[in-house]
Image: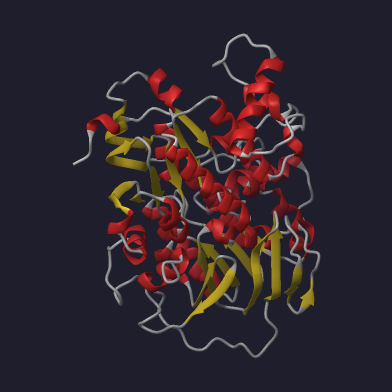
Length: 501
């Protein structure tokens, strides 16, 4: 039994469903947050952790249920209590660090020099050096995070939420953060620590809550949960080993020729930390190679490098045996490679442009020219052929997420590319759309297309892949197709690092 006098926050049957997509991000979550504790919240990508934190911090209101602050329902009390350090904070780039920290209505009228002294005192007390005169756009990712943390401490927030705070930190920086969190707990602060790294959670948390598919799977003291138990709560108990949805085992794929894609000793560092280390893989025509992992464990960096937005520190990328370093988005397109990104709106589409304009790259490649009238006529037929619910002249931003994804997939597969790089293809899709997409990928494989599937979805990984490799802390491990390894428990423990915690 918990001491009610120590409860700073209580959730009662909190549910959040996004009407536009129909996604149930949180369902019937009830839990208590106690004073002077570090509560870890864990779950796979898309489990509902971030939505829950937005609800707790007052950024959004729950569709159903209650969030009580010290027993009361006043939203102002909640906002006064909670300070959130986002995984990817958004600062006003042209303002200074100081101006970003003091931005907001809480302090009312102020003297800038006085507030600067207050903030400097917080920095000195907690050993958080950061030049207050720097423009926010000059900051590195760790510095941006530090700016938000200083802001929360200056505003004397009693409950701090840190969303994947070590994702951009080096090992040394992470250890320094842990020391700070333990100190803050000793001073009476409460910390909600969102992480997918089990070894970190076991180091600093007092209690651990696990979220899966929007539902609270369990919450208990750290000493009552083993790393393997945490991993199983995260990946679920829907199936038993040997009963997972798995791709039918196919005959041996011809690997005697030149690989369509080859990564050789690929390495990448960020903020002094090795994010990818000696990545080697070969992908051949007519196979799906699934790469599973937690996105913050390196999967995002693999996607960024393969689409040409980041450059590796070491190693080579070969397409059809030819070195394509440095790889750029233009080189990718000119090589005939297709790419379905995890971020549909920012990378996969131009939201303010029409459907026809988003498909225009196909029209040019097909030799139709660039005449607007012919473009819209052709696009209308393409949209009809692929059952996309939209009009050629309709802006992409007005489509549902499922139809945007349908447009991107159809576009990228239209010219029968030698290689398809696809990242998190099922995010946000309903079951019918997911099945249709999976069928398209299988059909593409049967037509000889080589597919690199980057996904955090274990069921998707198992059901589509001919081969599976798992990325953990920047290192790649290939999964043997045996009953012992080819199941969601073994792969899940590799992904979460439970086998090493």
